[in-house]
Image (cartoon, rainbow, N blue to C red; front, side, top):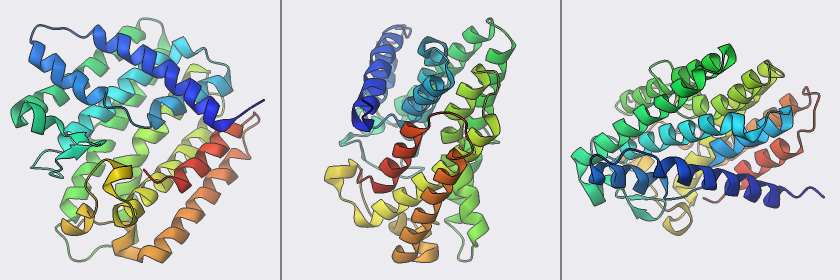
Length: 292
């Protein structure tokens, strides 16, 4: 019988096993560099992006071994972004997932290089898949665009630039959400669809965009209402650094309403998919109700 928590745990366990093997295979020419890379990758976390990719692949009938290299590449890209986010020049956070940030352990220079190396390692994985055929090339290109200057990095840049502004609009906030967070939550769904010969592509892209908005709404709310014990990172930093967040724009109570509306939008999209979406539906509730 289907059980969301057990199913999530099974996807997570399968991914963690593969991730460990891929990390062991990273070059060790400079041992400290590899240690810095693996340190942040193996700090744990929800792994929502690779879990989402494995679940979507399962739903679409794509074998997990087909998407696993992309899932690992995606997690390496996500981890590199967190290493760089925590640097003093960016969000300046000393903790990540309850442990000292990469730069607090290995120094700022090595943290920068560890992030750079993880990004390049992710692309090496994608290039290796491209020899399999055209749809693997498309999947690789999709991930590259989602991570780059037309994706996550655009959102991070906007996040920094708009933190310096006194005036902003809802459109500005939606841009940050769609690019900084949304792009790497759309990617696992789109890649699974591409490898399934584009089955449900438009619906899954739309679902990913709404899920990205929901995820960042809850993230902003938790920065106000959460605690270090659950989040594993410093709370209250958004206000301290003048970040453009839903709480700053809407206030806390309206932000909660916006999160509920985003969750409803996710569920409406899933109704258009002609397959069993039970896990994705439950994942929406999981994201909305999360405490960490």
